[in-house]
Length: 429
Image 1 (cartoon, helix red, strand yellow):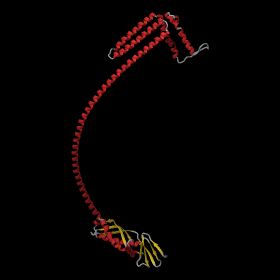
Image 2 (cartoon, rainbow, N blue to C red):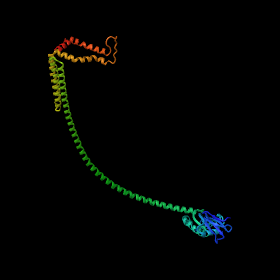
Image 3 (cartoon, helix red, strand yellow):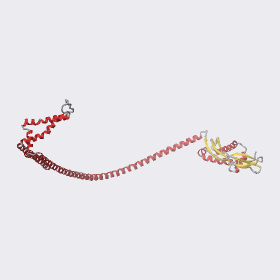
Image 4 (cartoon, one colour):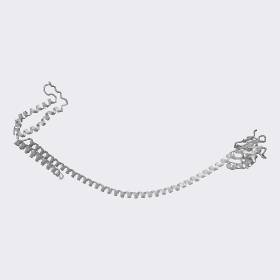
């Protein structure tokens, strides 16, 4: 062995003995300097060992045999030098199994001794007390060997004679009896409390119903008063609305009537201006005094009739508000038309030929329109020409003009008036 430092882990301890040491040097989980040949190094395990302590068929203080299994955790104490030295004296050089055997036998002996001093009920019911007693008694012996009991727990209690079962049945019956009694008492208390609660609930409900009825009554009274006030205000508002609507309609009707009167007045003025314009145009184009006088009388009669009619209509519109306008308008219109017809008849009587010529001249455009109407409504016209003369639209226009050229001869044959001679005499004058 070469001299030098020797180390060990935290789960073991070095024991150095020999030269320079009156007592062995104990080094738990560390290192030590060792001289070879003159010093010896040994190791002792500090691991925790789990022991299953079984004690089958042990008689208790009542003479009842039971079996108990406990679990203990033990280890060699490495922090206390005295205990570590005692452990070295007892177990140094021995295997860990030897240490486990010694500790197990010690624990089992103390476990059996404690079982013999207690009853089955005490062991079964107060397991903590049993474990504490075994732990204390076993620790006092094992500490002298340098072994520490880390923990002890009672794992199982068995009874091959049926004592525990019988004890459990009696306790079960007692518990069931107490449970039934308690349940009956609880049910009775519950029914009593339910009855009291129901009585209180009914009383509270009656009081609440009375308060609700009072509140409902007050609400209905106030609502009726409010509804009456609202209906009155609503009726007043509706009457005011209808009155205002009637006033508005009346005002609109009056304004419409005024507008109609203004429109009729404007129409009369426009018609009068149009009559004056036409009269001036007639005066400028017709030089013959007789014809001019005839046109003047006729237009004046028309204007007078229109004026009378419009005035009658305006007056009738105003009188209609009082219920008498329609009859007056009809009478005035009839008078105007009668007066116009009378004047027109007198004019025709005085200017017979000129009047007839005027009527024919006014009718010529209408006759031309009637002649051209069938052609205008035709969708398709097919024309065949030899190439001599006009073709196309010019041909159609020529045909219409030819027809219109034959009108004077037709007039002469019907009325005896020669339109060409009359027009020539007008140009001479």
